[in-house]
Length: 256
Image 1 (cartoon, rainbow, N blue to C red):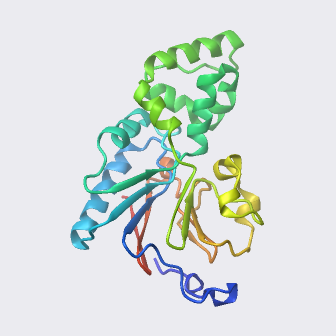
Image 2 (cartoon, rainbow, N blue to C red):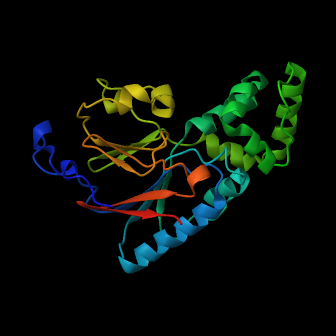
């Protein structure tokens, strides 16, 4: 893929040089996985191959959230992220809106309807918990919550509760959904970082850093002067995307 020249043409936004990652690390930023363990395995191999072909002493993996829902192997995805991290990498796990919705359901079964509507049924399936058929009563939702809590390892809950909302390296800011324009990056609201869409996507504002995000599906990664979108709808398309930032250079790794 050819990267738009406007990514390096920041003079119009008052920049004195092109955006670049941190000088002392190579960053691999992975888009929304959504229960596709098969694709994660392929992408992990490609990342390891890339590192072998282009050695670096400080490789860092950033997962942009939405590990669960929609695909059928959410449990395996979490198991892998927790128990089988890629060796030699520093790792940041970002919180997605789907992890937030799952945690909300664990606290209040009445949140189940909203979670099921965005793919929670597939996550229940991956843990062996039957999902409701049609509109479920309050009692039925409470029973699903009880069974899910029994099936869900405490390690998985702890992992999701500790997920980061954002990280920043070099000239790039990594978060799940995006940021609200006209608010400093360090003052962003959690809900916007997890859920924002149109106000962010339509903005031509030059944020203080390039925002690298997932959350909004596009047929291919989107490169703009102020943001890079990496959600290529892996659960449906089979394309899981990873942006590689190596100083002032960038490239893409994708499945299949």
